[in-house]
Length: 186
Ligand SMILES: *[C@@H]1O[C@H](CO)[C@@H](O)[C@H](O)[C@H]1NC(C)=O
Ligand SMILES: *[C@@H]1O[C@H](CO)[C@@H](O)[C@H](O)[C@H]1NC(C)=O
Image 1: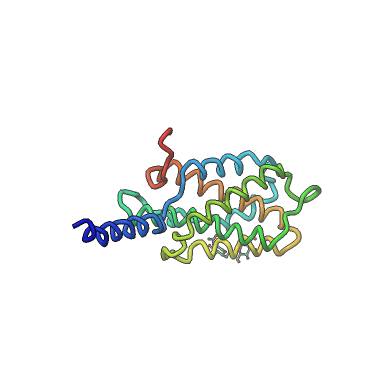
Image 2: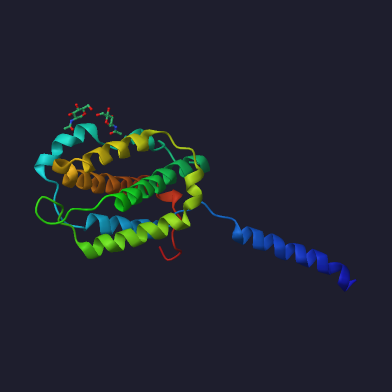
């Protein structure tokens, strides 16, 4: 009698292990919010001479779903956040941020904290990478990269990237808040 229960118990154990091991495609709202605050508080202003690049560079609002009433729409919204952070991570890896004269004046400690958080978020949410996205973001990042490749527009490229990344985080935290998972305390 007892022995015949063993396979069942084993199966239940294996099932619950599978559930635990399954990647949950979620982003933690509180981490994204901290990343948002760090990016916002980096300091430095938006130089007037960078305004002229605005016409050619912006993350189109069409990247975001209009509503996030259901699971696929939430995945799309979270994908935009994931992909923006991921592409920005590649940019951080590939290009050096100019500091001082003619460069950006960002708080280095906050930038480092932001990048650590970015790394943590990306690692946890890597399952979002599988969501099919449009080419909208790759066009945006191509344009940003082209600014970073020209010496007279490097600082503008970084300034624009920081502004738009902040916009993506702000927008989803406000409009797609229900798509994030939040700690109980909030
Ligand atoms: C914007 O893009 C157009 C077309 O690629 C280019 O001719 C123009 O110089 C760009 N403007 C700026 C300010 O980079
Ligand atoms: C990238 O630049 C091209 C040429 O200036 C422009 O047509 C396109 O709209 C830009 N894309 C984004 C997402 O800013």
